[in-house]
Image (cartoon, rainbow, N blue to C red; front, side, top):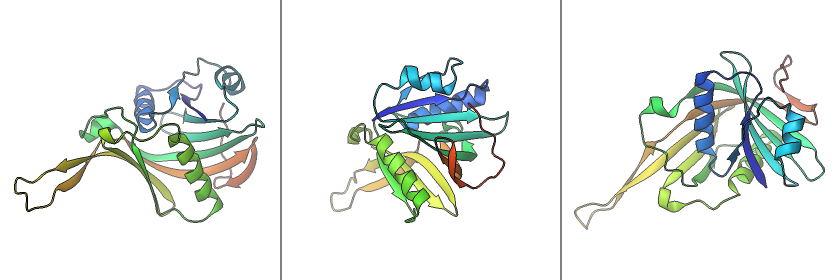
Length: 206
């Protein structure tokens, strides 16, 4: 499966551009491709080269509202779009933690339920990370945790410390890399026909 990261056609603020770079760090197996003012249909035609693809798209709706779209294209050219509001985020540089090494991280998915929307999210995320095996040398971990209807995304490096005393056990701690994201599912549509709609008055944006 081809995995692409891009953005909306709207003018991105400096903050959103930095967030886009951080999101690229969450999905190192994806290929970042700029929109270059192309409408989305043209973008798909020119950039998607495989039968199946996942496009992760960061939209800037206005100066303060951003959302993250997972757009899955199947072999029959059907597009299933899951739209998530970015309820809150913290950029990696503001966390002041570990530096992203660029290695393919391990994936951890927690507390999701056996519902259609949750299973779709899990399948989408697993497909994004299936393009490469995790590189354990990097000791990096991306986690997605469902909590009270929100999806919390974090990226860490785990640090293993060997004891000086051989009779004691090694210790492991997590050092946060970032970014932090809190997502809320708003809509799911197949070829622009809604199958789930949390928000009635959602503004579509190319």
